[in-house]
Amino acid sequence: MGKILVTGGAGYIGSQICKLLRKHKNEIIIFDNLSTGKKKYTKYGKFIYGDLRNKKDIYKTFKKNKISSVIHLAASCLVGESQKKIDEYYENNVVGTINLLDCIIKFKAKNLIFSSTCSVYGNKNKRIKEDEILKPINVYGETKKICEEMIQTYAVKYKFNYIILRYFNAAGADLDISLGEDRKNETHLIPLIFRSIKNKKPVKIYGRNCNTIDKTCVRDFIHVLDIAEAHIKSLSYLKLKKKSNIFNLGTGKGLSVLNILKMTSKVINKKIEYKYFDKRKGDPDYLVANARKIEKVLNFKNKYSKPKIIIESAWDWFNSIN
Image (cartoon, rainbow, N blue to C red):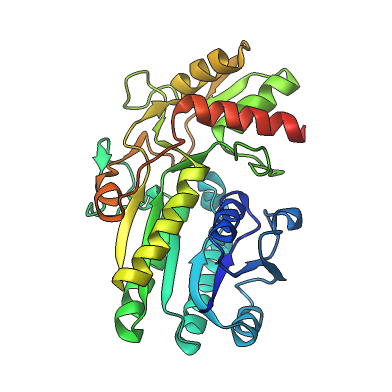
């Protein structure tokens, strides 16, 4: 049985996936350039420092290891930043994926799970199904859409199977406080709320004129443990069914920025100040999954994605590292 390569395995979601893969007795290769991930979170597999933009790095990794399946998470993934660093996003996300696909073909890996994003959909203002027309409104979403299209084209020609998982908003931390969000430049709402409390500063809310009930952005928050479990189910499906597929990875329930602020205040029993700022370019008003397909096809159910569990686990983690 071949090894599983996890690109971006030192990151927030990648490390959680590697931990669960190890629990299921898989042999894992973690490939990461540590631009946002940290080496201390790579203990669940063999770590190789490398950059997908450098074809030699990834080629060497495939040549030295018999890799049968790839979980591809490595990417630049900040909506706001993507609008400013366009060339960096195309190079990192698109060129990096081309280099990886070339190795998958050359070394005949059988399965690919690709971390995509709800940003490929753009602004829909309804629960989004997988067959929606993709209309990204930011560079990040555009690069992921290109990668999805490349994967589908390559897979047909070169005979490998894939699952594309379109993540909605990853949140929360491992319940045993071993893994969680640990980034220098944090952009996710819940850890930003905690930082604001710690620094005694108001939380920044971007936009108060969105096409939503309380006029703030609405998102679908899914616990990182559920995301990790979806990858295990996806891998089993690929090995068993030998068929490709695309799934949303969300809960089907939307929470606004104000909802999250109120819930967080209640769960951690802290008063939270906030201040409004202009809406950021490329930020959709409403992004919520229709998650029925993954439930039906993979028999996947979210276990941890209740707001209380998400907030409590993230708060425990935040306090453990601060």
